[in-house]
Image (cartoon, rainbow, N blue to C red):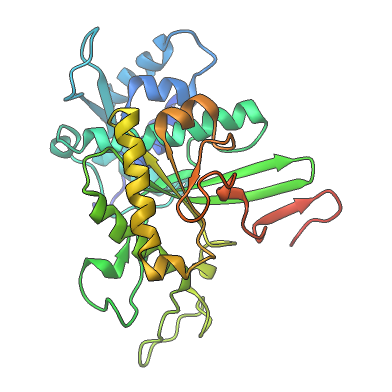
Length: 324
């Protein structure tokens, strides 16, 4: 990163100021996704395209075309340039990230997975508006790293848990408000079910993981003997596995396979504080996150909304009391 940050251009429209942190955080976003995210009140994204081209002319964003062919012409995908990233990081509006997308990565086969993560977050934001809840374009963050180093995995990639995204959603009901935090795991039917099952073990491990203090090191934010998640979240994040990329019949079999793997996994079975549900992206978009569309990973598959059934440690206010 350069030692002297590029100054932010003056006279940038409000939409341009919104676009930069969104593109920085979500890395690669299609024009249509940006339209639904930031200008849903307009029929066509004419002004959005004008502002994107203005930002491109200033050297703050760039674009590539989508690898997967779409009818009606090539779809443009947008990302911030190094100069645009410098400006966002200097503003401190969003959490800084070591990873920056390059033009080569933007044009690579990682496109579809990145866009599907954005599409999943968009389903939550769209339904939050319809339900009177709160979940905006910056309320989910992709690939946040969580360290999990216990006696079983001191070395190797299993020492890191990296959800596809962490999403925060404020749910408003007649009885109060709750800050729901989700780990999102997106499966486009390209990963072996067994590998996805092993990731379930990592999530269960994180739910109970208590860091061991390093000799000679003491973190001012970490309390000895308590779980690592308490330093980041009000409650253990719920895990929502979102399936897409295949027929309904294939996805249904995939759900059953995941439930069978979980039932055979001792670690997952013995971690009741981790609520896990499975749904499809199409159901999430069509019916919303609180419709009866989520299948619990364990137990009765018709048990109801597993993602709201855990103890309400994440209540931020109720009809009679505000929790400080």
